[in-house]
Image 1 (tube, helix red, strand yellow):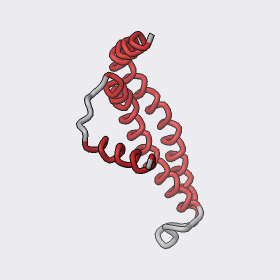
Image 2 (tube, one colour; image 1 turned 45 degrees about the vertical axis):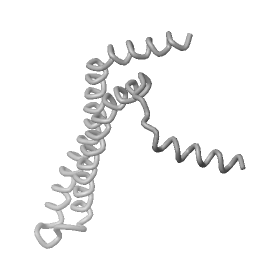
Image 3 (spheres, one colour; image 1 turned 180 degrees about the vertical axis):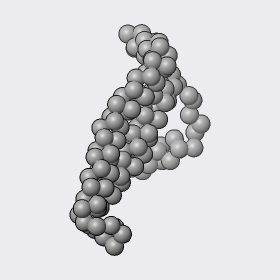
Length: 122
């Protein structure tokens, strides 16, 4: 009987209009800070890894063997691979800079809202 009541309460809660609380607002602000930086880091990092992988494939003569000589392939592959590695390293600094700028932009709002919520609890 208790399981049935719990299930009924869960279903009922899905259909009751939820009010927007300050905690919900705090979660949304936190997401606004972190999500764009993460998306840019994932997309830029993926592109950097594709460039790095292309350089490795060229160096190992997996692709481009019919176009260039072995020495040229190795040289081009190393250059492209190093460019990919550099982009992977730069990705971290882009992420941190973007995250810090968004923290500065929304930090005051988040701290103010957090203080309100903490003072309510005390």
